[in-house]
Image (cartoon, rainbow, N blue to C red; front, side, top):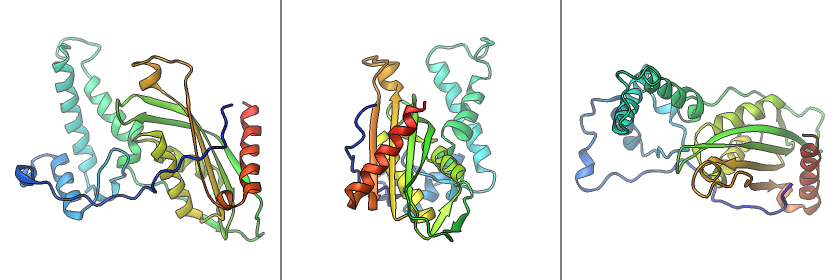
Length: 257
């Protein structure tokens, strides 16, 4: 297993305010006739960013996700035609555009368009203060540069505070966060932010180990290369012994694979 001791520090993910478009772009969505145009206009008016790894579910109106699916399918069909694929007569690609639209909006990028899964927290009545870890949790994401898969596993460690959440909820939140186009360095920060908001742990650690198909399938074509990064917060950051215990525990979990 690659060394997991190094920390990668990236500025905390905040859905950023977006400045208004400049010049002639200011009126590009003045009277939008498409679902995507109306959504973009609404996001800009609210000063909300819509980067690839942002969740925009709170800004979608009733029926807009279905309308967006139809619009995406139309655009994918145009892409296939631009690639000189005969989608009108090729039985293998006749419904590809619709499949791809459903896949993007409801599966591989669902973390952008669907709200956060409901997660209930419970009081830590036994005042548990020992570290526990959860993993390996399967990671299925996509590179925001090439929109090809990022596949791997993550491990989450917690020193509980006053609230705890069920173990399965870590998997649900991780799946929701990773189901967006990402760069790996930012993905762990976003996941850490979400977990902190849900249960406010005294200590939190996340390790992500993944293969990037933009490096494995194309480009340099290195089939064995992987990336490992981590984030530690709270007691895992301030206490060397707590940090060591976290990394020791997840090494034990990986040895069971």
